Image 1: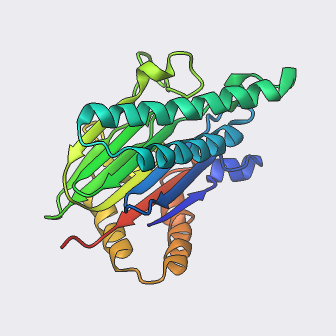
Image 2 (image 1 turned 90 degrees about the vertical axis):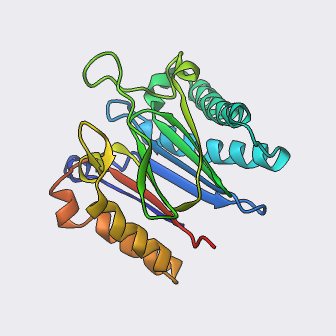
Length: 250
């Protein structure tokens, strides 16, 4: 598993730090956990919000899944609800501790979380990130697509009062050979619009790369270079985050 968050060229020219964040971990029982967040560009402290959301979501997933082993879709939905609830509560607490100098909206961020367990993939989504999985036969499937609000350019954020009602959770029974989780900075390169079907020439080389990589540190550096490359930045000036998982299926 490798991942990278890279500052967009528009943020670089404007002196704005990268507002994306990501985190990954593997439980002793073998499950892979992923969290990716994209801080709202209009929010003053969204980079903090994204980092807090990722940290707290991963912690909540790890604690919950070490205590319980969901087998039914309803149980997986509870796991994701707890995860997102813990992350939001952490943002609320952080905003309160910041005092009058900040409001909860200043930490606005999206959040997408994934759990890759044997035979099961569970993805929780709030916002405009996306996730694409590859099964054992090499077929690509969009397992989480960007959420769109009622109005054009309306985005969903974890700081919204109704956030708990907006979370979408997908529980899919499949043997996953590779998985990509991303913020919307790569949307137009990775998915065909408006269908949101995976663009195979984007994903296939990346999945082959992560499956065959023997040196994690070197692979991570190469992924960072790819996201910052002129050919990618020519297509998007936004911050870009991509987490890739590859595994052999016996």
